[in-house]
Image (cartoon, rainbow, N blue to C red; front, side, top):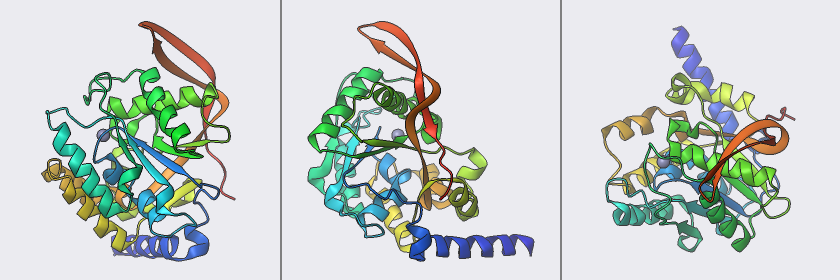
Length: 279
Ligand SMILES: [Zn+2]
């Protein structure tokens, strides 16, 4: 009975948070005009950033899909399936609504798809800077330091972004937001995590029931990756229903490690993830 009540509350909360415009728009990034999503592998966009992409592409905000760009830092060739996964990404993005001409997939030998490898920050930075300037980006969305799944390729992007923010190398006024990682219990709590996530975060995008179905269709387009444990992930993950972000800002201390010309350097500068209070 208690569980049913909690579930009922979560369903109603999610309904209000998504469909009731004053709430649903309350925590979206208000001044985002040209958005770049930076991921590590084909399927990251669907598995982790789905609610955000669909909200941006399908009119939940005053935003046009032609202004949404995707930069995927590798072809996902860990098992020599890079070429196949590239095609799958294009097909998935068609379902999500990202225009094909807005998709950039890098294929650098120094950005190998491997969960055990940390990518060098200056290589990641170079790719991000090129895209950010070429597309006149004002908002960048990417992983946080834990990379949702703990994959080192994911967290490498956060390090590179923190470096770019603290070195002020991005186009002026560009804001960078990191997708918040949550613990494993919350990660697989689906609807049950929505109220807490929505209340605690300053930037939130939610998915409707229709969006949830679209995300499953997009994941099916990633045929080579859509194996049983990812099917389970798609059923129970809260990332299919809600995305919460924190802004990466200069401000307080955080450490970033980068490698330049083979020399390991440790930076300890003024950078932080801003956790703004809800307004
Ligand atoms: Zn990935």
